[in-house]
Length: 75
Image (cartoon, rainbow, N blue to C red; front, top):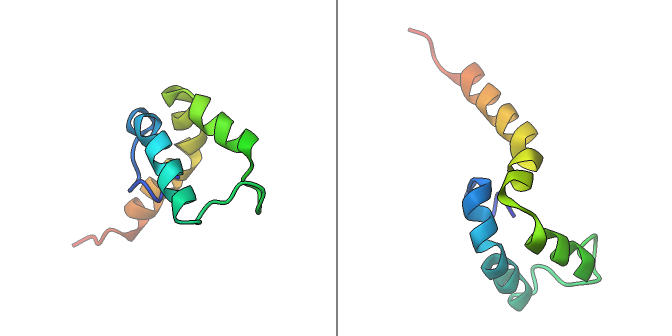
């Protein structure tokens, strides 16, 4: 969800989660019962607080910032 949303922070991702899930289900990108996506997962995503979303994303954000730091060019 985070990558699809363009890397939004938890506050904005929480606000747009319903819209994103509805769109992905409408276009059959997410189908309840296929893969690891279930109605229970959908419910968890929709009830997750912005702070919890940020805690889940923290390792990914730290890795992304480390890659950006390592890839910069020093003159």
